[in-house]
Image: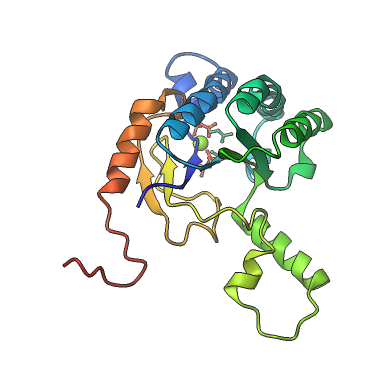
Length: 231
Ligand code: IPE
Ligand code: IPE
Ligand code: MG
């Protein structure tokens, strides 16, 4: 089975920069540049959906200067990558509590989302002010307001209250930077995703590293709790 949806926790920008005597913000700048390269490689490898964790609900705890740079990079990414996205049939979406972002970032995002909304070849979803628990709580609150039925809730129905119910669950989750944790990413959707953790920092993660992750995925035996009949 190929990877249709790849999710990535883009971690390690700060350590990448510190090891080079650069500022953490320089690390984030280098990391932001990497996204376009990975989108290009993912398209080449036949992936249809890429979801990247760019800013968590917990990342608001970081120093104000660092948060400011990250917010600027969001606006820059939206504006700078728009022409490439239009050329390559790439659709941009976001998940998360994006109302918490500064107006300038929201405006740039909104423009790029609107301009690319009819593209269907590839979808990049950027998780911004995203938390897996926040997503579940936001979904439950929406459901409590809207749901009329007395029938017991099913997984299929609840899915409709998530931020992007139409996007299939990730086949593969890559975390760069070596930490062996989920850090509140896609708690519902990752139930049966294959995990791949690499020590490589996000600014160094490119086509070759992605190829290694996809090769590892190709050798996995996905059982989904059942048994595979080949053995
Ligand atoms: C990931 O890099 C980017 C964000 C969380 C916004 P980090 O900034 O977490 O880098 P490290 O983990 O400190 O190296
Ligand atoms: C996860 O990285 C969030 C993003 C990559 C956006 P963190 O660096 O925030 O995660 P922890 O704090 O190491 O768990
Ligand atoms: Mg980190």
